[in-house]
Length: 118
Image (cartoon, rainbow, N blue to C red; front, side):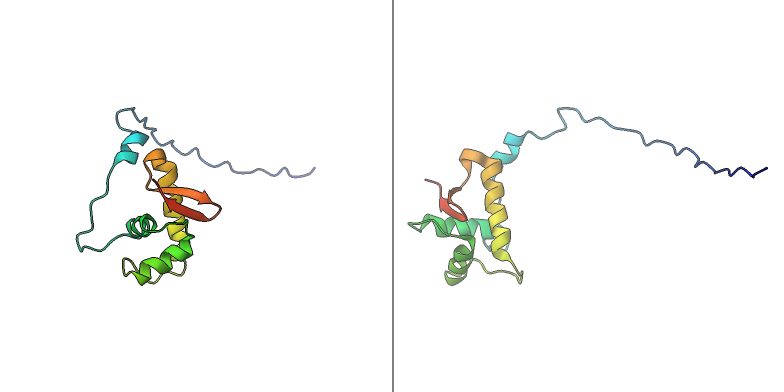
């Protein structure tokens, strides 16, 4: 006769209690889009604000690399040491356009280029 192998089963773990969120606890997407940001306490401008200012003064659409260079030249904003500030700025602009929609400060002019919203 052959010996039959037996396996041990894991003890049942207790389930975590689930919580349900009510509609009142969720923030509406429009509330997030209309929220305005307070200026920084130290007076420094954010990269997104600086990009909006540069694009407002520009007559043609710009890439994010051109925006970073123009912001540094005008001394509005400089990178705190990141390797890809242009990619971060691109993401922030694209996020603002998708979240705020028609209230965004930016418009996508063509592939990789942004313009100020008129």
